[in-house]
Length: 270
Image (cartoon, rainbow, N blue to C red; front, side, top):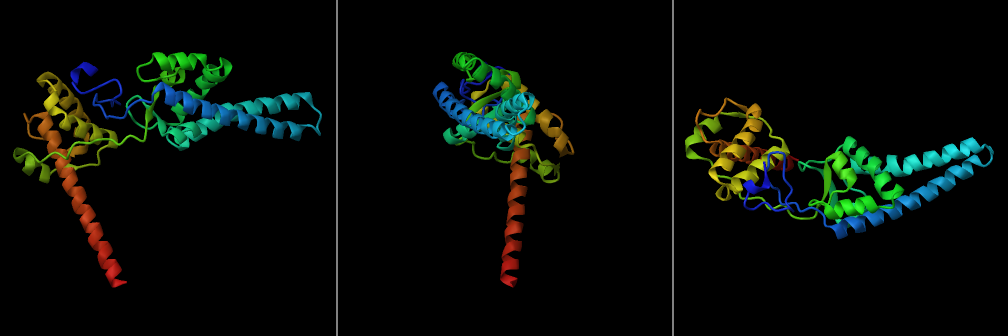
């Protein structure tokens, strides 16, 4: 799906695997540099402290090989283990990113995993520390999404996480599909898929018929494994998706009301 299919998609939009923009802008060069400098400062301080601790611990032994091993250990822990662990546990945030409201995400907008964090840390050691950050700087400057080499290798990039995601209003139930939706067994949709459907339905007026049909069918193919029975034959994909989202919303609201009523009765009984 090319960005030309969407009149409202810009270079700053985060696009999911289904080709729907999510309005999460990529971090600017200035923000990337500021967060990177903060991360570098924290990393260097961590390395110095860890190196001193390990070196002092090996002084009584007096073994040069052990001192060298301590240096290697300090390097691996500081430049690889800690960044990978931090980004994995925080879903894409380092100290610098947390301070400036940034987050590393997958190219499809999902949270990064251990694999992505590890690749970013490995390539980052080379491009940031071994080559004094020059490859990372020029890569970010030339990339439309502000990607450094580690982002290209890992399939990630950095977004401004403090931007409010603007979702359209929930779709209304298409009358022709209301009966089918009410008797349908709806499984829980993946968060990314549900979000992509909401964005797609909100942008229907901006899509040409060919793009609307193609994107709608792609999203419907992702949804059908979670729906039984299948929608009526010949129903337009956008109407089926609207019916699913509307029915899912009604069921969630009903569940929340039941939970609230039960909580109220328990509190009253107590």
